[in-house]
Length: 161
Image (cartoon, rainbow, N blue to C red):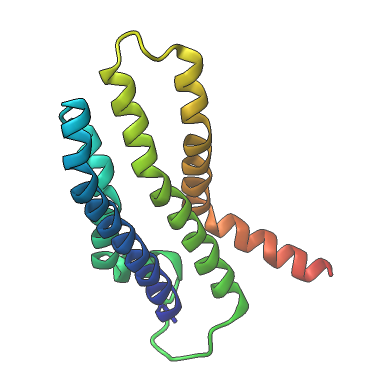
């Protein structure tokens, strides 16, 4: 029963790892050019924002089994077919994981840039830069935490129709 959630989590983790490898490779190619032109060092927060997809992908992969047990309540030991309720629970949770973890690097980068700039970025610019990633991150967290609520809504809609 938990296999659908495990597979989904591992697909998301592979996606995050590939994005992380791509970001690190891009940094390796672009950093010599940037440093020769601007003589600017990357801060720890910027490096963390580049490595965040890789790190989050590894963590999601390693924790996919415990997370799947949390998402799908499988108290019985008997093997049964995957039902629609568990697909809705796993799907809602996986969409939340994707939304939350895909926005973390952007949040770290924007916050890191804001902390580095003293006068270059006004409050309107930082609020604008943080709106979409923050909203997506919060929606992702709500989907992860409230996936059982969406299952209940699905059951109610299925019974009403």
